[in-house]
Image 1 (spheres, rainbow, N blue to C red):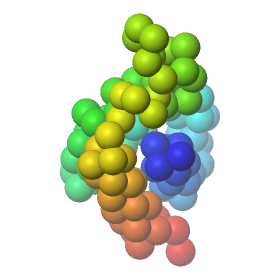
Image 2: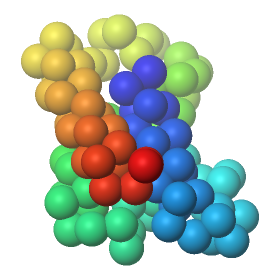
Image 3: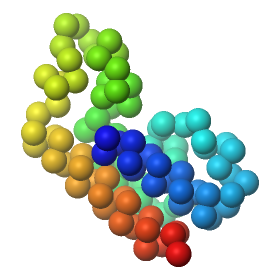
Length: 100
């Protein structure tokens, strides 16, 4: 959910920055792609989040995880807390910088 919240926040930033651009990013789930050109701080946080989570499908679809593992077995508590922290920071920056 934290990944999806960060994704929606980045899309909101794009909508606020340039509503025409949203059509090129609306189907993307790639946080690195969505964060580009929104500021180096957002880009850095998105990169950190993606390095921890990997492909977004691993968190959403159990059959996307390799082997017989389920998402709960792939991500430990520390990783989850870091992901949540990075997502919250992205949301906070977007709210301050883009949402008026």
